[in-house]
Image (cartoon, rainbow, N blue to C red; front, side, top):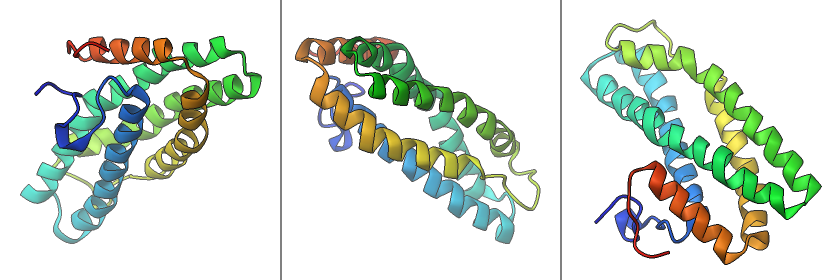
Length: 175
């Protein structure tokens, strides 16, 4: 089975790109929860093997899938929504896309610490990244994705799915 096809851990496929973005948010939330647990773990046990493995999973996800996710939204979803002509939606989407830079800046010191394990300070700098990310995803999940589902044509969704698949080097089944 290819990445993103239906059936992969129950995730939506590229034929449901908005569902795929929402599923990505669930995975991001899981990694945020891991960061919270990792912070507690590092305080108690330092950068042991368990901490290193958790850090590698989080870093690996954000280094690749997280980058793709932002590109999906910025390069493909935002332009589709802009064409709809809903000023409030366009403004909200622009604000959320600008937040991607804030998230990147907040993640940078955390990323350095994740990659430095087992040598870490007594405290992992998970904030403000985790709080910013959770608020960002909440806005996308409650405003952007439902509105996109309501206003985008099937052809727009198919184009979004194809672009997301291409970004990942995947040839999806016919969309």
